[in-house]
Amino acid sequence: MSLTVSNVTFSYNKKAKPVLKDFSAEFYSGRITALTGENGCGKTTLAKLIMGILKPYEGRIMLGEDGQERKEDGPRETDLSDLSLAETGRKIGYVMQNPARQIFSTSVSEEIRYGLKNMGLNEDETNYRAAEFLRYFDIEKYADTFPFFLSQGEKQRLVLASVLAMEPAWLILDEPTASLDIKRKTLLGNYLTKIRKEKNCGIIVITHDRDFAKKYTDSEVRMGDRDV
Ligand SMILES: Nc1ncnc2c1ncn2[C@@H]1O[C@H](COP(=O)(O)OP(=O)(O)OP(=O)(O)O)[C@@H](O)[C@H]1O
Ligand SMILES: [Mg+2]
Image (tube, protein in one colour):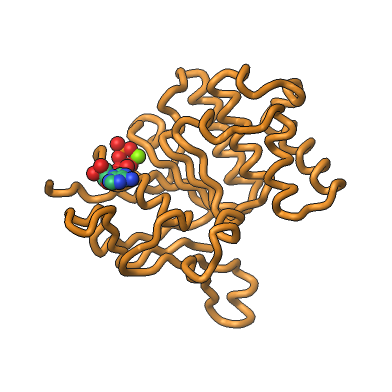
């Protein structure tokens, strides 16, 4: 399964220089890819384009289907622009730099259940997955806690749990180490390694953290510097 960005051009403002100009890259699932580049080069913009929050002016973003389908019927790809925002949201999970900003429920368990209910899963499946992901990210003891009281690392794990419970094809983390100390960075790195092994999803880590990238990612897409 791959995520292919082909000749994408995007600008926030028609008069300004495009943030992305004829940009192409390929991401492979089964790898953890570091997405790197200087401040302002367009990493978060690319993530928003992949999530369908922004639309490219030109170019395409294609999602390859899994290997089996590919063998039977030849290559199969989905153009993300053919999907609704909700459909894309189920395929692409995004963890913001400040995860607190994407938490809005009144308990940890409810936060995980919210997305699952929205997907139309029944009560049993919702309960099962919520319990599984509370356990997976070691936040069971906070199930009934108001998320506001969690530490930064725990909030990040809650968002990871909420996103992965929906079984996305891709997981994008935007600057996930920015507010973590060394111990929590190691914990996060170990989680990413575990997710790559155990969950069927590709992982993209937007990062400026060279040490983290070296230790926990296995390929790199570097975005070009904008000559502004
Ligand atoms: N909503 C917006 N409206 C207008 N311009 C924007 C908007 N968001 C970002 N930009 C501009 O687009 C460019 C790329 O921004 P983006 O946030 O994608 O960069 P980045 O690579 O994620 O940077 P950083 O490493 O600092 O997070 C910047 O010049 C930024 O000022
Ligand atoms: Mg950014």
